[in-house]
Length: 234
Image (cartoon, rainbow, N blue to C red; front, side, top):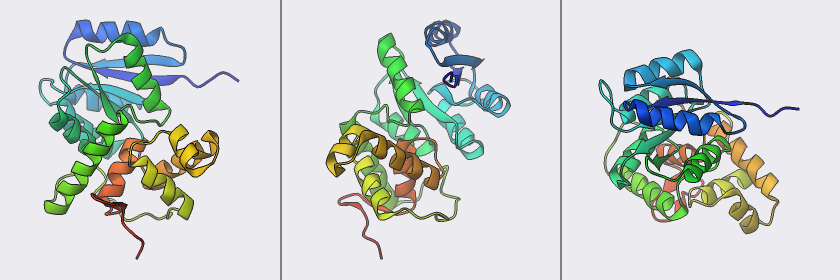
């Protein structure tokens, strides 16, 4: 059976960069660029019309910036994954992007292999963020949540209809520390395939598109303490 083709949208106001990304990604097996946008508003409209699996979103664009566009897309289409594209590894931008609903980010000048890897990891449900950065940013989000409210694409949702099992709760705790499926499998002495199934179920139950946003929604629901990880069950 032929593998499913993953549909991508490119959003950047620089035509040459979009052309370079298209040439690179269209040449990869299982990936197809189905649309391009030059503004945040165009990105929102394209996602509504094309329903891609993933959009590569520039941070700075005319009419509407990429973070604002990401927030709207994730409200309307939570299953669409967003990978931010930025010139600089700015933690403040990355934190704001995660809060808006992004799975992570990739630098514009990243080597081709790193860009493709980030896209594939996001599509496979893995986080494109490195473990140390993911942990630091998620803890910072949790700490900010304790001190002040902030807009969040999943904040309006009701608590989970389908609660997590004890094993899924264990997996979520490891997921929020930035562990990969392989690391989760080793920690819990289970197979990588079983860990992946648990992560996929967590993502589905939390109503998100990827593991990064699973951790962010756990913060939004008050499941995570910034110091100790998951809050104990009441």
